[in-house]
Image 1 (cartoon, rainbow, N blue to C red):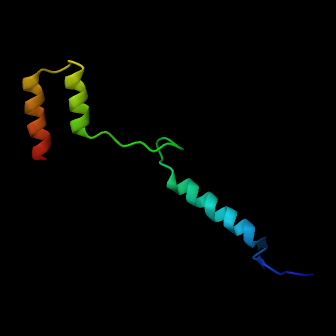
Image 2 (image 1 turned 30 degrees about the vertical axis):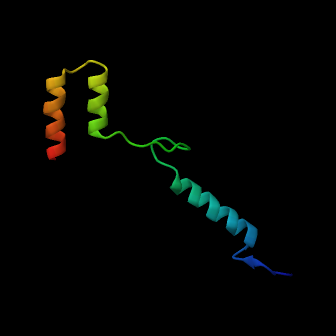
Length: 70
């Protein structure tokens, strides 16, 4: 039997495939596989609520100061 280029029963090419597969699994984000999205910060959420008209300018400024003080 010839065991040239075999390591623990697998050819070098198969080791390369497994390494790439494991890297791909751990490199993708857990919440949305296959997509990379920036998480929204509390300030981004506050700006969106202000832009949608759900809070007033005074409420926006108060909450912004609270967020920035943290």
